[in-house]
Amino acid sequence: MGGFLLARTIDGIIKIAIVSMILFAVLVVLPPGDPAARFAGKMQDPAKIKQINHTYCFDKGNVGAYACFVKMTVTGNFKSPSQGDTNIVPRAIKAVPVTFGLAVLASIFWLAAGITAGAKGALRAGSRMDRSLMVLSLIGISFPTAWLSLLLLKTFTADFGFFPPGGYVGISDGGAFSWLHHMLLPAFTLAVVSAGVYTRMTRTTVRQKLREEYVKTAEAKGLPGRQVFFKHVMRTAMIPIVVMFGMDFAALLGGAIFTESIFGLPGLGNFVLQAMHSLDFSMLFVGGLIAATFVIVSNTLVDLVQALLDPKLRAA
Image (cartoon, rainbow, N blue to C red; front, side, top):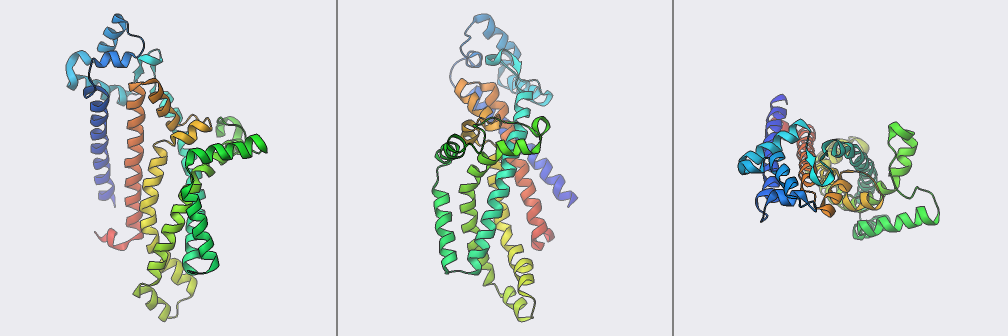
């Protein structure tokens, strides 16, 4: 397992380096015109553009500029000309716990609802309950997240006043209850669509595993039904669900842009959205690199969990 982790760590570092090169090419090399003028934004002052050329090493060619970008990212001192030459790395790092907390809370909701509903539907396939769960999951999948965010915000905030109209309060600032009070509605919004997907995925996978020969053999040996279901059926059925969860969780960590924007959460998604609105290439580079890092780390953890669930993968 140690060799696996080392290999995946090296692989992850290589992938992050490749992503940084792609981001640099998209933001600096490929667009036409002077990159210093693009990074200056609305402040098209010749002295400012000259300063940007020096700060970002654009005057040293693409290789020198990329080395400068990497150095600023690693040292955590990446200044943004459109933000008054302030360092945006601390702001990006401050946004990470907001998005991470939202992703964890939303994933708890959709995993609990989706796996439970899917397993119950598979055990009682064709019943009225199964059909009802499938209809509900289809309705959940069909909801546009942005529209659902606005609907829930109007209903539970404007009409009934159950939740605050937006904003964010950290656990260290207002306590766990206040944090949950602000995060519950946006997390539920994100969970609705995914819960429907996981319900259908779990139902299909569990039904397939129930037909496997090793399950029938375990039942023929007289093992208790609960032991057969949880040890033999659900353990193997969870493997494709874990893979899908890793991708979905990584996508959330990359930034739930619309949900964070609608609910006024200062997370990574809102950070990237503000960067796109202001065409701040520095913020786009830092935000994109952090999002890519989340995806790579999540995929590594998914591979590790798969190895723990599947003996064949451990042997390999």
